[in-house]
Image: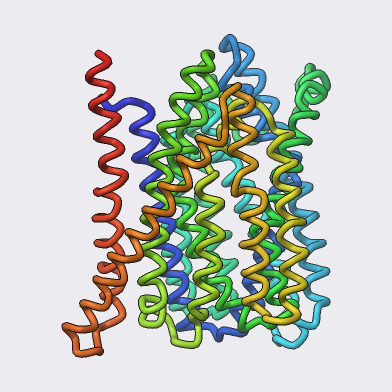
Length: 495
């Protein structure tokens, strides 16, 4: 039987594959049924709704960590009931905040000029709150020891939403297809979630409205780390959403749509690449010996560096021609903008395992400090450079902020907490990432131009996808594959 770690990894890959597939389907549907300007206005509204998870004030992440490390079953049960009551209260707050955000957004010139009805954005806000409540409940399955099922449900929700989006557009709902599909998918997931909670944790219901007698004690016991986790989430959301909002407000909705597609692609890439760190942190949290923690993190780091480098290198060589074929030509960002966005997310992805590693140690405050620094280090130069170079300046400013903060501070914090030297670990990560990126880009460039040569300069843009996939596969086999083989031989010799 497969180990829990391996099952979680396969489930996480399923979720990532679903995310990539549904994103491409969505992009295609948007380009077919909406104008670039209309999509840009709606995309900015969804970026505002990205702040809704902050209404949870960081409690869920802390509770997941506490449930996983609980000393006995009865304590885990009490924490679970507390978590459900808290999440139900948070949903009510989330709904109010969503309506307020949409009320403010509908008063902006961006919405006024679009001609879209205010009711559309209020519906988007309601659906956004409902969807985030459902995804929060799915995330709580990690704390209940159902990490693999959490990933499977997340992927299934994405597939269902994509299917409903297609049906809604086919029914000629126009822009209304976006909230209708999302809302219906979220409602349909209540039944499987209710069943999982009741079977996994002694009749735990989906909705808990009665406050438990020890509610106040538990709340006071977790509010400080939850506040730190809240600050981490808040600053991180600002980091990963404010750039698109700035493009929409300072440059225009058309550019926001183009920039949003590139950032969505890189977000999906990071979602795939952070799988190692995400599935490893519950195991890191349960390891008591510092040497075991450091050894596991070292293995994750090296494999993650090869993954990130080869992926983004191959992606840079082939993303533009593929998007130009898949979408309309004017929906594709310039090569330099793509390069800056990919470089920024590559830097962040290289440090990804250490974010989860810090969570496994319960150091939520340290994560919050780093996230706050990155916002200021990114936004200030982005706004200044936008004045001179528009979208290009915003992308460059955010790359600068990522290099100044995520590029090294997370690595330093994690290994210092483990009483290990961090500079050798940082260097071991980055030289692998750089070599992997050079190899992935070289192979991707070679395969794509070989397609052009064989097609007399008229190769179908769809060929860029298999060219990039082949480049990544070969580059990874020569780097990450060898890393895994080396680790396997070392483990065998150890026995």
